[in-house]
Amino acid sequence: MSIYTALRAGVSGLAANSSAFAAISDNIANVNTVGYKRSTTDFSALVNAQNAATTYNAGGVLPTVHQQISLQGSLEQSQSSTDLAVSGDGFFVVSSNNKPLSNGGQVLFTRAGSFTIDAKGYMVNAQGLYLQGWPVNSDGSVVSSPTSLSAISPINIAGVGGLAEATSNVGVNANLNSAQDAYTGAQGAYAAGDLATGSITPQFESSLEIFDSLGAARTIAFGFLKTAPNTWQVEAYARPATNITNGAANGGLLASGSISFNTDGTVANVTGSIASNFNIPWANSTGASSQSIDLDLKTGMTQFANSFGVTSVTADGVPPGDLVGLTLQGNGFLTAQFSNGRSRALYQIPLGTFLNPNGLEATVGGAFKPTLESGLYNINAANAGGAGKIQSGALEASNVDLASEFTSLITTQRAYSASSRIITTADQMLEELLNIKR
Image 1 (cartoon, rainbow, N blue to C red):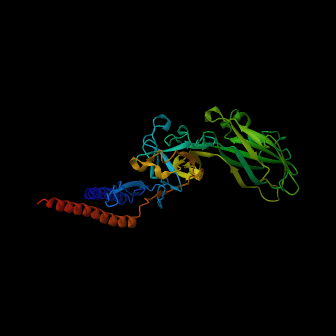
Image 2 (image 1 turned 60 degrees about the vertical axis):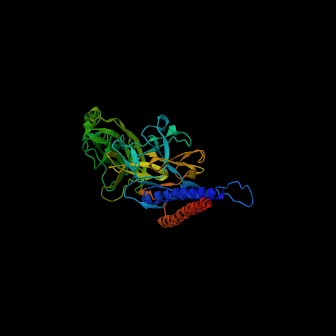
Image 3 (image 1 turned 120 degrees about the horizontal axis):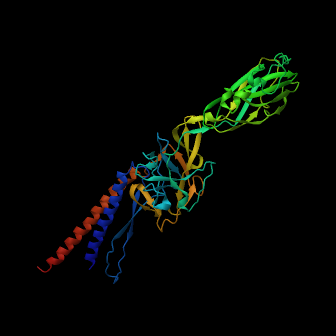
């Protein structure tokens, strides 16, 4: 009977619009939820078989609710460097626990990037999901795989200690006074090591600070003695001399040689062990290992008719530094910043991409898991393989438009009222049918 099918169509309309109302309510409630994806309700007609052309059987309506996952929300600036947002396609790879994904971790994907460092050093977002990344090896290389979960692990910075770098390259830029008289042997004939021991006083001496393998500051000095026109003897020695093995016996001598100049005051040649690379055999008492120094006396040394002076000294190496912050640099590299001004890449944050992101299934904490409809995931570096760019100090806002939601709220309410009117009208018609017997 058509009245009964109309009644059921009204009931299906109530159920469908109730689902739409629930989806709209969820959207409005999550308008400020980071990374939230708006839910929409699509309606499709249910068609009953018609037995005759003179009657009609109502079918009703079937609601289908899905999330607009591929629609990006606006990026909003944040004050925290560990807040991350994806500009473009892709999802952060996360897990509900801190176990490796290949050993009991559950792989999930999210756009909610409000990450902080927890008490154990893990990067966790506000929903309690653990961020995953590719570890960066000590040589800066990254072992990655677009399909293997064994290559990634939960990001943890608890084991990141202080960073120190030993000095390995030194350059001295100085002027040696061309008017200086050549040494005449007043303190005895010159032999290598005499400037280090003090047997002969250098005509010019300059010292600089370097760092050993433990990051301790050490002093080495350079002594210069003019022995002929345009020719100078040069020695490098440790101060104090006892800082190196057997230094007390030779004044801490590290290297010696000569430097000759052209008639225009530029360097012509550097000879001897001072010419390029020499070794510093630190004493056992310092606790530091032997250190190789590559010395450059050719680039910045001059001999002009001007007073002695050091223009500049260049030396690499840094003292120990503590972890002071984290930054995100090119292609998703999470980099540790140290108090000594140095930095080191710890992890590369990958992004998961899908052929059909709207087919993902929503789960707890604003995360998603793959389905047959979404297709398999691909895990790529940022800005590669179709993945977007990761921005630090930003968060992706909800993609909910309040104006659109309130408009939908009004139309849904009206549709619900209309469906209820179908039921009351069908009830009145049935009542009229029952009254025929009276």
